[in-house]
Length: 110
Length: 115
Image (cartoon, rainbow over all chains, first blue to last red; front, side, top):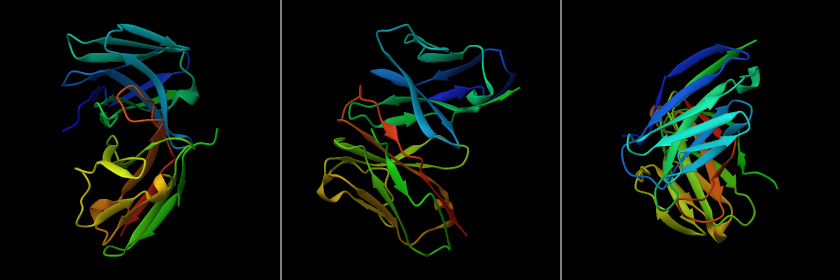
């Protein structure tokens, strides 16, 4: 079974709007990571949030982590067409092996 | 720095044939991973190497899949014989070291179609 599960499975928004997706996981974690995947650039690391952090920002990205609820959210503000992609949360084990969720497919229309 | 290189980008084979994928990790990265990503799913780890040793191959279907990382640099993943359910994108990733707090860098993947 997968460690992380994203919600929603798919999201369609217009340029300029915000996009929010959630991730739930099952076991305790050292950190949680978000990745983006599109056909042009493969799987790209976006942001890592450690278990002792509650919120982290990177450009237009904002990630929150609630370890008591075993959940995380990724917010993309002022979305652009180039943000069209699938977004995955992933949690590493002690060796660095990543367990991915099924992903949220985001479509941003002009 | 150059990213993780994979080849080929695409491969179409008939079931029961053999296929091999190649990966060149980022220079200096000790850890190398092979992931399988079936359409509509997240990537799933097949095997993890630390230098030229195997760290985890528990999810590798060893009756048909094999992987090696000779000299601790390049790696090849082989499927023999292929089944229809092996159709997927095979992603190679590398990181500087093993551990939970290291970032993995992914190649663009090899899309395999088994017909």
